[in-house]
Length: 222
Length: 248
Image 1 (cartoon, one colour):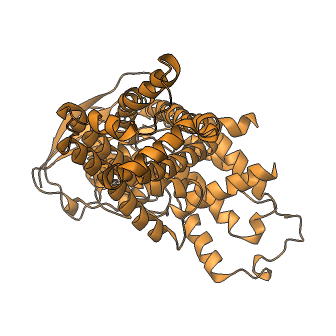
Image 2 (cartoon, rainbow over the protein chains, first blue to last red; image 1 turned 180 degrees about the vertical axis):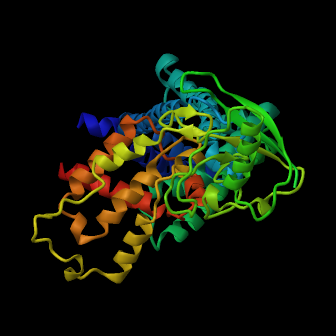
């Protein structure tokens, strides 16, 4: 078993599986967020369910956090080994002639997305923890839509969200299809997987961008 | 054709190397890249200077001995050729050509442009073989029917000449294309099934021990491979590895 844990392939598979789990989560997150634009009451009720359901809070939320941590830590560990594997760099290296930029810079797009996650968790998750457990407010199933829209009033935050989702799109454009190759799937379905990757990697982040811009342009006036 | 060569010079494995400029005249388009270096070395020897050391053997593109990172790409800008089959007609008069050794921590420089690629030998020795009784009662290989598609894929994998261009091209200096080709050429054939579980585990373990990086599926290795070894082999090796791990 220790050999398996140290193995480059096993580590890559962990990267692929955790990445696919996060891709699935992203889709679910988008479905909930789009209701903040088209059906605010539904957004409020779904958000309240996610915020107070014990299965979501005490089982699914820790699994999600573990998925993010595993993907991040394993990604850094693999990158460090990759850096050591070429201790002396080339004077001239024409990486662009044989591989696209997005595939060669997953660590950059990944770290930007990770930094964004810090802001995102501070904005919503930390706020929720303070509201529920520190300040001890009672349940209020009508507050979520207004709180979300308010977050996008400042231009700087909306711009940061847009930049982060562009980088996330670049990360997904390589990472989604790449995870199937890592798990040994390279066959007649691969072209379909690559096509679906392109659609998903552009459509979902673009959806998040449009939601952020929509809320910035349509603040709630009291 | 006049060219300005920038070549990595390093006295030995312990010395610190550097790029040195060598202007060269009279290069013809029909010369191979190695013949152009031969001309340079003749000039250097005539001037009493140390010639540039580089690996070469068959000069027919089949032995896998020649290497060289040429203008940032292993085996130069042409596709599906080794350095010995790269011709100077691919360059223009007045070009500057940067020539470096293949760079990987697992491929240490021995001198100038020569690197030690014995890490590949050790990966091969870890499992890249089949055990056959050769004590007089060897079974004719053709007596075992093999699916044409599988035979073709095995032969495609077996065309890997072990030059190391995949490692040199990869931004992570990963050896997974080489190792996967050596795993695949047996995994696809009935003769390779007996040792299949041990083979992939031992070869991957040795690959990791040698200090190669991890594959991030950029596809650079496939593009730069002079024999066109496909990324499908890496997916097959990963399947073989995961399957072998589950079997214990």
